Length: 308
Length: 312
View 1 (cartoon, each protein chain N blue to C red):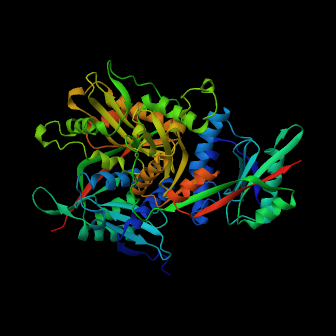
View 2 (view 1 turned 120 degrees about the horizontal axis):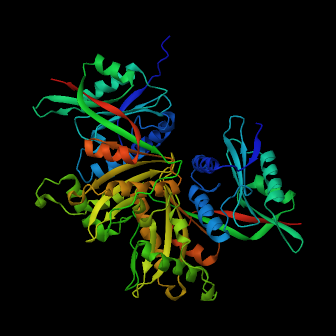
View 3 (view 1 turned 45 degrees about the vertical axis):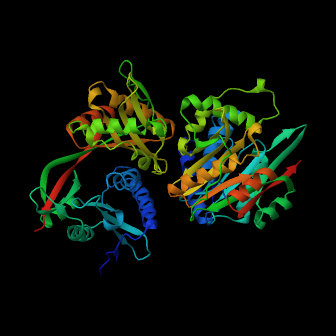
């Protein structure tokens, strides 16, 4: 099939990407072989807007369309120097994958110290992509994202919460500074507090189409500060939920708070009709938590790196 | 040769049917020019998560019938929220006089109710300009009533005007569970202003509404009065698949009427919807005050006429 490549152009493209990801999620047996909608929303609203100050991502997304105008494949960045290939199973071919990887090298690589580098991500069972990457000079990188999942047919067991802590959903706007501070302490525990840049970024999170405050679960310490959080995104169109981010402030770690937040979120999305939940982990600590809190079932999304 | 697609009718079976109905409504919404010719997902959710558990209307499995094509895909849905009024949702590829008429036959047998005089009756709606529906209704002996439902809508593709709140009132999102009772009291005073206060049943029901997949607290807009009570509210369900929203509950406590609070809540909700990518919002008006509010806040629309048939 003859596909036409073009760059991302308008807001309408964004909404078409979302529909494409929903369609392919079902076609992939409800697995994360492509991104799912919450990840796309989170990339745009948080990783681009908040973390990189990017509003327009026309040069970070490329779309292949069929003669009928249907999306066949999407190539997009996430962090600079990373490329993600999303393909429709009916359109996927070695030629298309090769073209996507070649375009990634041309458009999404970064240059440091005169050396270009690019990471392309591939499922650990995806031999087609792995062969192409190997042939083009990529090797497995040090990172692999474990994509944990849990089916929600059965009730979610209760978990005992550490004494004095309360598991509840995020409060109103007056609690955004506390929630933001917990993020800072959870993800940047070794950085000086002087580098903290405020809480206004959280408005961009809350503007996401799938955001709901009652799925933004927090553990509140006896002092009233937010000690841990797990933000759930429920896509009712695919009846799937995605958990991102999850963190606990260092002073409150090892009390089972993240587990309690995740369990509470799972209970809530299940009540809303969710049938499967996902969370991704890159490091041993989170992976151990997710394996025990969701289930051992997972896919592995591997980093492949090329430098030239 | 008969080219009419063969459809099979069956009653609603299980929760899976509910989720298939949602997908079906999402599929046919754009096929109907993004108009609410049939229910959209927010209305289905409102039925399941509010009317059934809170208003104790008849369970879905007793009120719903599905027509499926040979490949198992949904072609049409017939249901009532309570006995007495039938709602049809039909895929445009399958819509025909015979299908509609057959659906009315099922509705007359299974979904009828009783009027004030105790006569068995079925109510239904026909959109203005829906000649096929009117033809079916006349052929089956239905008579038009002097009751109209206005379907208001507004596209959100341009700048939205500021709608300031009356002095001293604050427009904000609904708070947490501690505010259920205050929010429920506002509903009570808005929709039951002439009833004795001892009929007020508290606020626990609000948790049901909040369990709906499309509920979000930041689209549950309230106007807080200077004394701290909730004076007005606009609960909006946003369907990000079709980039459309429905104002499912809008009301102002009687003590706070005529201060523009309903319009201010809607205006704030529309601004938030626009920021989330919503391109069209709907509201149904069933009486003159609601229609006046929606006309000023939404602007355009069309009407459905109510028809009835006495069955005994």
